[in-house]
Amino acid sequence: MRMMIDDTIIGGHDLVRMFGDGDSQTTAVDRVSLDLERGQFALLMGPSGSGKSTLLAMLSGLLRPTSGRVLCRDEDDTLDIWSLTDRERERYRLKYCGYIFQGYNLFPALTARQQLEIVLRWGLGTPAREAKKQSEEVLSMLGLGNKLNLLPCHLSGGEKQRVAIGRALVKNPTLCFADEPTSALDWHHGEHVVELLRTAAHERGATMLVVTHDPRLLPYADTVFHLEDGQITDDQPVPLLHAAAS
Amino acid sequence: MNYALTTLWYERQRYLPGVLAVAFSALLIALQCGLLLGLLSITSIPIDYTRADIWIGSQDILSVDLGQKIPMSFVGRLSPENPEIDPTSIEPFIEAFGQWKKPAGGTSLCVVLGSKLEDDACGAIQALTPELRQRLTEPDSVIVDTSEMNRLGLTTGIGQTAEILGKKVRVVGLVSGYKSLAGAYIFCSLTTARKLLNLKSDQTTYLLARCYDRAKAPVVAKRLRERYEDNVDSEKKKDMSAMTSAEFSWRSQMHWLKATMAGVAIGYTAMLGLLVGAVVTSQTLYAATVASIRELAILRALGIPRWRMMSAVLSQSFWVGIIGVAVAVPTIWGMSRLAEFAGARVMLPNWLLGSVLSVTLATALVAGLFALRSLRHVEPANLLR
Image (cartoon, rainbow over all chains, first blue to last red; front, top):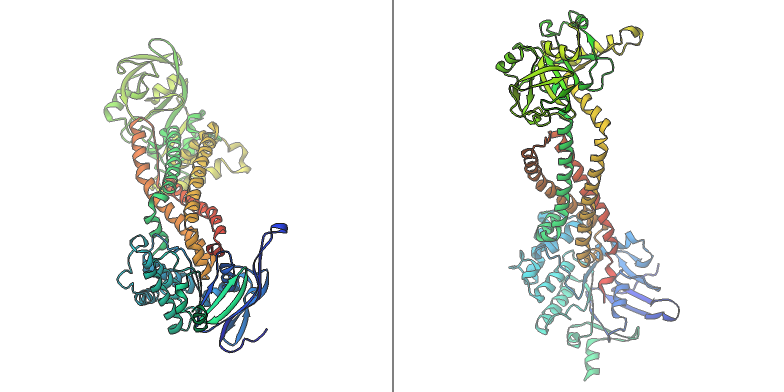
């Protein structure tokens, strides 16, 4: 297995994903390679239909690529996550990955705290008391300390998205993947969510890959990848992007 | 904290059809079986409402109403060979079908029951008060159940006369709670019964006996069977049946259960009830799980194993079953009282209620197993747009 260099935590190599058969076959992602570093807050941008979500799904172990590899650093070794069995990949996701999706997808019957507890108790087998403590800590960090026992129907859109972020972060993932996490929010709440994600990346050392088409997120990113027609057009540190924009 | 129970309570309207289906299944099965037991228990009234511990009847007897003649000399087989039996308690008991000719014409089947009438008699039904037993000492006098008057063509009851197998009888009293199935029970003295049924004084259809210690009855019955019923080496002596009252009651009920095929009919409808309950519960759980498919997909994406979600669905099916059963118990009680008020006999012994509730709960769990197929749709990649 190829060793990964420097501080790279996960990398996609020549990733290709096709959909359909015969004449109707389309290529959503075409020979894309990219590396993400530990603690990096990266944006994956591009127009609708450019293949952003498909690339995110392949990198995060949710969608098998037609060809190519995704390598992830696992302590002293490197894992090729698409050569793992389903069960191994499930364990990989449990150990390393957090996810935030466009919809909040919170269980309507469970309180904010229970949404997080269920991940710890069902996923990691954390004892009830410990799960409760950890969930409260994460929600307090996200500014929801006074809303622990509220059901989703009593939370605003921004608060629900923060609970969803808490659910992704509560097991301290090394990698966190977010698909349009601010699209359902006004900019005030969206900005707060982005700040939270960036803080989590920098303070917890978690690598964040955020799919978005919102340019207002650019100032917060460490790195931005642009995708068009299934291919990376450039990836630059943010200052260069800002310079290019001006 | 139980997530399944929390969800169940929060979305109670969604789960209500499943709960009601479980309750309906339990109610249907319990009432049907209760009615069947009630119906069958009628066939063993002469055993269940008398006080004998041991019943001696003709060879290979199937049911109490199918007794054949046996000689009174069988008394010698009971005592003194069996010291557990109180020799003073041994007495004849007569039961046989007869034909009742109504006062105004027409006939009806009846069952003649002749017993000793003394205070310590173990063959006299409990409803025969000393006064009624006194009246039965008069020749050709009989007592019938109030509910049978119509069937027997009686209007005023007491004082009316009729004929049984061509011999005149007079109604001297009425009892209640002894309604029969095939033919109305006619209670009378041994002398009257022998006269009506043309039995000689040394003949009877049963011999009854009591034990000093009732708990010894099974041992005595077994010993008598080994000696006079089961012993292949003594072919000549295989001419009687010996049973405890409980054994004979069960045998009589089972005979009529098989003879009428009522068990098959009840079993079939009970299966239908279970099936309806299982399908509705399964679909309720399936729909509820599908409604949470995106939330479950998030958990799958986070690496939470599928078996956790399976156990959550099964846990929900368990609680749907428990709540359904909890709803069913008071409903069963209420409906059985209603049925009894309407004149039906419903028997709901604890073993029956326990069995019905266990089977219904198990059905809810099986419904949960079928609902697990909904988890096949949980696909984390579908969350990405």
